[in-house]
Amino acid sequence: MSMPILLLNAGSSSIKYQVIDAEDESVLATGLIERIGEPVSAIKHKTQGETFTADEPYPDHTAALRALVAMFDAHGPRLANVKAVGHRTVHGGSRFDRTVRIDDDVIQALVDLSPLAPLHNPPGIAGIRAAQEALPNVPHFAIFDTAFFAHLPAEAYTYAIDKATAERLSIRRYGFHGTSHNFVSQRMAHFLGRHRTDLNMIVCHLGNGASVSAIKNGIPIETSMGLTPLQGLVMGTRSGDIDPGIVAYLHRSGMEVAEIDALLNKKSGMLGLCGKNDFRDIAAAVEAGDADAKLAFDVYIHRLVFYIGGYMALLGGVDAIAFTAGVGENDQGVRAAVCERLAGLGFHLDPERNALRTGRAHIISTDDSPVTICVVPTNEELQMAREVNEAMGGQPIED
Ligand code: ADP
Image (tube, rainbow, N blue to C red; front, side):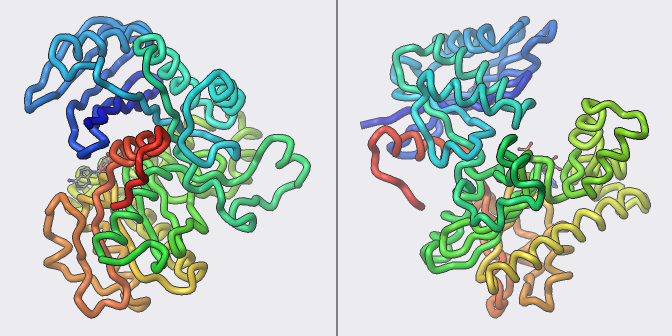
């Protein structure tokens, strides 16, 4: 029996979607609604090899969902066949450690968690409400970015700040990109012919946002993002780790909290250092002798190597490492620079394998490399579909 599931990823001004049949894992449709709330919005809908577009104003998520329903009605697949809707949800706090069916209590919990993720949870809730209105007759599920990391060891998730304050405000490390880290670690184990429970793994999810995780025998023991997705690695526009004293210093120097938030989230990272956040542009600038781009690249690699080395120590050695997401899957220069610095710790990269672009999981280390280095394309939507299917009583699917 087919099991089509609609997967929604709602941001403040966009909604990405896919329909995946959880039975055979085929993709029945993909699409993107952009510029919600602006004078002209746009929807792009792909199904059966054809692309359909429309543009008119969608003032809010409800209007955008109506446009989505109209696209499906006009071009298929039939939404009436969809068995469930899965919503990517950024912050599940310490309450949600798995995919759950959405009811009023879950919505209230997401509202309560919004102060922890002010940029992400409110649009997510708007997307859920609009989708429930548009598709009232199927169950809706929330898939949390934080869930995979919900059981990090206490010594990993605890910040060394005043305990009472931390408890009152739920300040701890939560970790994000969990759906991707979960999927990639499963896929890597499968593809290596091993089971996750027998491996020490490091997963580097390097996209515009970036995070790294240490997974011991299938259980995550560390990850680089924290209370918010700002901590950790240098990212496209986010600073990653900085001295927390910088925040107070900026404030005392006259910046408002919202400005500091915008500076660290949107104007920092690679963009802040060299004016570019797309790694294709950065590689071209480095090639052309741009000193800012070179320093930005070096800082990015330095921080990543620092994390990987630390995670090797925490794991007590690593069997395999995966590079995934936009940069990790596509940028051989980043992978080469990281592995070159880690050669002394057993990272022996094969340059020819590293240069191959297969679009599938493949090994890029030499046959005798102590650490197996892999490129593993992530697929967050597929992982979401699997989790919704399982939450509906389907068999758990591992690769
Ligand atoms: P996110 O989901 O966080 O928005 P992605 O995982 O899609 O990000 O990654 C987007 C980033 O991947 C781009 O900003 C760019 O830096 C990088 N990227 C995409 N394609 C390539 C490529 N061919 N070579 C190098 N970097 C690439």
